[in-house]
Image (cartoon, rainbow, N blue to C red; front, side):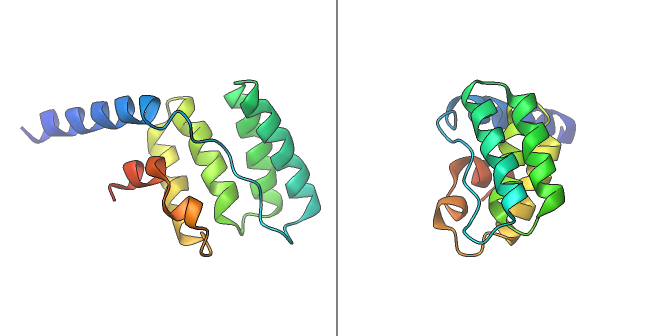
Length: 119
């Protein structure tokens, strides 16, 4: 019974994340962020807008390695992982994004973040 419930929960999460949250996109980095990270983040947003989610993830991951202190960059990585179907990894990054949100209400109130974290 637990296995069936787990499978149903994952299926619901997948369906909800790919439909209800389609409008959520990547966030800009906060002011004062490392300029090189900001540059990679901008490139990631450009790739995201072209629906190149793997390319976007490459840039967001590079930005995160340079300056992973903001919740926004982890959120951006998470939504890419969600788009490419790696929901477990997405959930981990959403958790980090929440911890590092720094009062960003857009991030804190994100439906996709809340959906992945069961909030």
